[in-house]
Every structure is written in C-alpha cells, then in structure tokens.
Image (cartoon, rainbow, N blue to C red; front, side):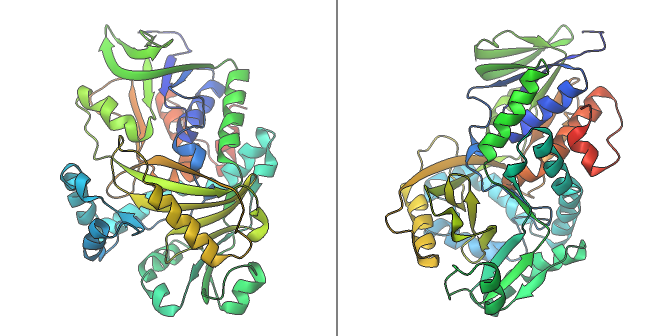
Length: 417
C-alpha cells in the first residue's frame, strides 16, 4: 500500500459523476487516473436533459405504482416501459421497485434525496464559472405542465413532498403559462413553476470542461474498458482492455453507471441496480421555442433549449444493457414535441439512447464498499446524476482522504481551487 500523502486513485467511469470525483480528488493533491472506454462525457451524461433539479425529492416508485405495471408491459409507448422479453431478468428489481413505493419507504427515500441535492444549484453555478463556461448555466426555473387539474392530481404526492422540504412552487393558469412560454400548445392549462431551478445547456461540453481542468492539474485520462478489479497485496489492480490494463492503485472509485453492477458482482458487492434506458430526440435548431426547462408532466417528457437546438428527452425503458435502441421510443418523443410546439416540421433531428443507472428506491449508492478496503461506490443516480454529481464528488473525496466536507454549497465546487 502506498504510504505517501498522495494516494494513487483510479476512478472508473468518466461521465458527469466520475469526472467530478476525479477533479475533486485532484484538487486535493491525490494522484488520480480517470478511466473510461469512451472520452469523458459520452454515455448517459452526453444525452441527458441538463436539469439541475434539487426539488426532485419524490422517487420514481410512488404509492400506486403497482397499478401501472400492466401498462408498462403492454404499452410500448408508455412513459415507463418494460418489454415482456426482459421481464424474467428484471423481475427481482421490479419487486424491489414496487416495495419501494410503500409510504414509509417513499418518505425515507425523499429524505435521502433531499440530502443528496442540498446546495446543488450553487455548486453548479460556481463550477461553471470556475471552468470558464458560465454561459452553460441557465437559472430560469423549471415549468411542469398538465392538461388539467385532474392530471395534476395524479402527481399530488410528489408536489406535497417538494413543498414539505421548503421548495416554493407557483401554480399557473393558462395565462400564466403563456406569460412564461407562449409557444406551448393550448392543450396545457395548468402549470407548476419552480422558479429557482436551473439547466445546463450542454452537458457534454460541461463534462469536457471538467475533464480539461482535471488534466490541466496533472490528472491522467486513460481510454479502456475495465473488465475486472482485484485486491492483491494491499493494492487494487485493474484488468482492462487498453492502456490501463494491470494498473495498480490504493483506491478505486467505481462510477461506471449502469455497468457498475457487472464490475462489482465478482467482488461480492451486489447492487440492486438496473438500467433505465432513456431516449432523446434533438432538433438541430428551434431552441428558442422554450426559454427554460419545460416538463410535459403527463408524458414524462423534458423539453430543453440546448446550445445545439431543442432537446426532447425522457421516458424510461427497463430493457437491459445489450438490446439495441427501440426507434419507436424516440419517434414518440418527436411526435409529442410536434403536437406541443409549432415550427418543428422540417427541422432536422438526431436521436440518442443512454443507460441511466437506477436503484429501486431512486437513492444513489455513494461511499465506501463495506468489507473492501479502498473500494468506493458512486453509482445509481438515475435521472439525477447531473444534479448530484458535484455533491457526490465532495462526499467521496472527503471520505476517501479523511477530510471534513466543505461547510457551504459554494465551497463544494471550489474546494481545493
């Protein structure tokens, strides 16, 4: 084991979470290598909707979710879809998911999620400034839209949780919606506005800027597929396809997203982790149709004014890591967008599918792996990896190096600067 003051650390996974961790550790003087099969920011971080959403304290599994299971299995256009072919594999996770919808479990998950999100807005705003990309941070709120009060009532539990944690929510009528977003179709008559929320306008460029800052501080970035981890002679050794093969280190941080379960299983670390495949359809233009993150709540669709155009993302497909993307899922997003906004006909598009790493209760796994000295976990963030990335980085860096966590949210982004 290395006994110097600069421990050797490998961070496996260069999405928003892993790259944030690598940067936080390097700021503190650690000897860090960041490893991924792709360049930083590819994978799930590339295609997300950019939402910084600290009010997202309601887990995906809410009371009454059991009633939605038949639709998940039978309706290919359902916002939450589980193909029948994948049901046998997903059944253990699905049973935990349904159990997580018990009121007591929902309350416990909400408390943990609130703790994970605390200070996220301030941390990301400070980080974009530090990285020299302040234009990526849009603090203009999130607008959730419903066709009518009946549709809103189906989400009443989640809104009660937000308000219980002190988030200010403004209910809007049609005139209020038009005042904020005049291009939304008349179908949406009720809005719920979270004014103090934010959007990252290009998540990929954000992660790339972090990776560049990490490298500028002397951090190393390696390309390679890590296939196995082994603890030998007091050190960790990585088995990989690429330059990182045989790398030895004192600590390993697994931030490999939906692939974390496969990597950790042989070590006896068994996570109830499942991939929730998310899709987006990017219109290469028309970004000015909205001026902030707009959530079509009845469709579970996020519409975001990204740098490269209008991004329409969402849906959850529990279909495993290896099946090809289902083009119908992206097509549904395109149809919903065109029904909601005029001016999209003829605008060129591209599609994307990525793997969100999700726990049954929506609470990420962050911290030391019990019984495995030097092994750290940072996975399972689901839809909230961007929101929670900087706070996760501070938790891991502080615990791994035996330091107290920064005292203020702003300090999270700038610790060690």
